Length: 53
Image (cartoon, rainbow, N blue to C red; front, side, top):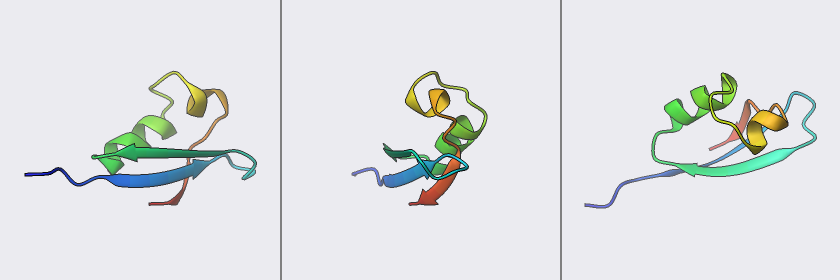
């Protein structure tokens, strides 16, 4: 059986940078972005506002 997934877009508070991601657990992934748990692009640019999923 195939797993379902989500495409999501997050941005920073000033809406100047976008990040497009794919995940199978949207709630967990957004939690990781908001709490800066994973090093990388989204942490570097303070991306934590969910725009679309």
